[in-house]
Length: 320
Ligand code: UT7
Image 1 (cartoon, rainbow, N blue to C red):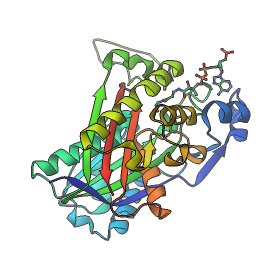
Image 2: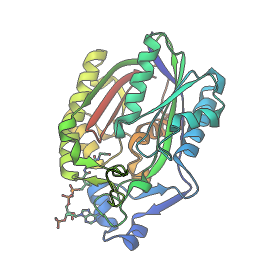
Image 3: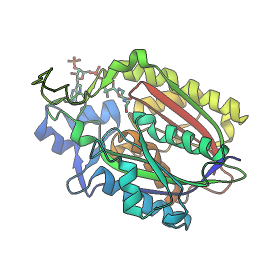
Image 4: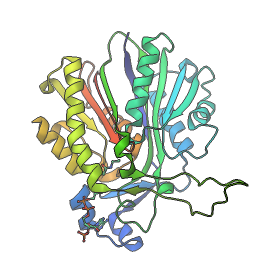
């Protein structure tokens, strides 16, 4: 039996930073950021944490579904920017929600994290190991930025998105995932260096580094193929898809995917203008925004797709 999304939620930090404000911090312009990415502002955490936003998004998803926390038996959080090495974000979310019946763990599949989480929830349900799962993407990426590096810091934001998934007759129709570890050094953020009595290391804390052009090329080549494959597996023609909800990295990437697939841009809702790129949280936040606008009806076919560090990618076709 497949898994179906029965509720969505999201949480964005209170503070927004416009491109104009960024001009004061780093050598950039509003015009460059808008032209090259489509981004106009992003939300940055001040009081918020990865856990607090994930808990809020989770609560909103439960409320949206009309479900209680004790119904959840699986919590998966996709994140690359956890507040702590351990306990996991998911374990803290379990505590924050009072979801005492849930097994909880984090996964790191960067911007494909929500798609990978959805695939794990689907597999648990097919194996009869879960009935109700909370899949979350949550990031405080601003903590991983070099605020002197205009090639990265202008792109990313903070936030969390969640989907409550239940084992039901219809829902996820297909899931496609992939990883290209050989190209992984195009987008990196190193951990603390080894530091012990045998290996003393004074290296400074590292931040996000990206070969933007390499990641761009990967995205425009891989994402349409992954979506086509997912559509083929679901036996659904692209014309039947109401919305394609893509990772919100760059409007030019989304336009290129739309063009390659021969579908109009109205089929590709976006929120990157206001939120920037929030890695694992981008897709579930966008899904929640579209859901709460009332743009989805029961039975609609939609596509979700994420891509990023790893390099990783994932695409899903589902019935709403
Ligand atoms: O979520 C993970 C997935 N990530 C992505 O999908 C990101 C994919 N990559 C991209 O979206 C684009 O490659 C970027 C938006 C990151 C960069 O756009 P680009 O058109 O590929 O620019 P570029 O890196 O080739 O740089 C072009 C110029 C350079 O100047 P020169 O060498 O031509 O003089 C950069 O130094 O733009 C300059 N530049 C900037 N100028 C003003 C780079 N960043 C900025 C900036 N403001 N923020």
